[in-house]
Image 1 (tube, rainbow, N blue to C red):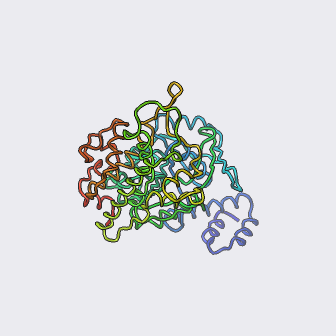
Image 2 (cartoon, one colour; image 1 turned 135 degrees about the vertical axis):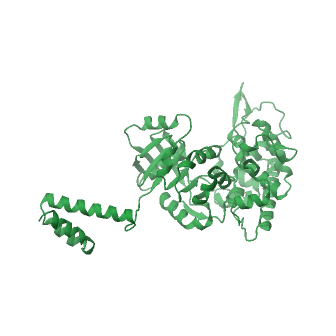
Image 3 (cartoon, rainbow, N blue to C red; image 1 turned 90 degrees about the vertical axis):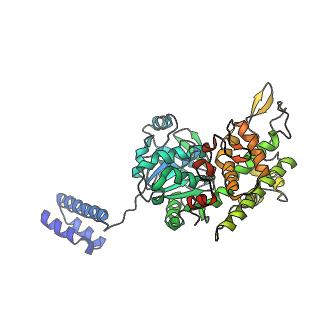
Length: 453
């Protein structure tokens, strides 16, 4: 049987069952079998390119080099072309060197398959790899999101899904601002939080998933792309956590517990009302040490955000911010069964087993303790969380007296000028997620930018 016969069989390959094709191949000499298989492979590839077949491959960029980014990279590299990207200093080069020719090892506590071995296709700091990406996952601190959006923007192809874990507040607005006109061709997915509790055990080479959340909230902009985006990301993550669809990214933004809890608890312990500025004898518990005054601060802040939610729903007919719940409800949703007393917000925090032993960020000074007031609880959660809520409240004409007090104190801690005469008009507002930071000056402009209509 010559090459012509192989070509004839190739023309009819789609009429043959697998058993029939195997019988044909078994009757061929080695060179004939190789020729036919090559012809069949070329035909299938050509059909896929012409739309006659379907591609099930996916290229994923994972951004960052910390715990979460390494875990995502290790998980996805087992099945899809996964490229790790870091723009932080020389982190990409260090990770690539640390891994060398070895595989990446991921331990999954409590799982039947407890060890996953994989290897990323590349580790790089080259933003042009975005041209290959079907999905981009950001697992970097929120203050770095803008840099990734901006550097990827020139290279991204239409239809790219960008998942941000977690998005914090105003992530979709920042994304639209950095991508400009290209944003309309992309899909932004804001996650409420990270899917796992995890840590690397040998940086760049090994990591451990300590636990996986049962459920995780995510919102899609534009909502018309919701099904495709969430199905794709669920397929990448696996069965758990189950991605639950939130109606809009504004709900994710205003649900953000970090923007209330972290600066609120820091203010409650180290603010001008209660602290004299001197070192303390013991490093206090953070969550489990919340007292009545701190609880009052938190309740007032969360109530101001709730008032903002109701105002937004009144301004935009049909808008649902049901997921932007009170802080206490967030604890009931996320830590059910881990709190021995849920009678109040303070007791939810004081009796939460998940917080056992967690203390305030402090530095030891001559045997005593001083707070680290530039820790991420203020340095990150104020610019990328609380400033968004304050800025939107200003546009909505919703008073926020408690948030204003906390923000006025916090901006001094992190040496930024944000709030001036009660308005988000400071010289550093562009460094925040406040709508004013991206040039939004009216509620109408915000509604358009957030695609709420």
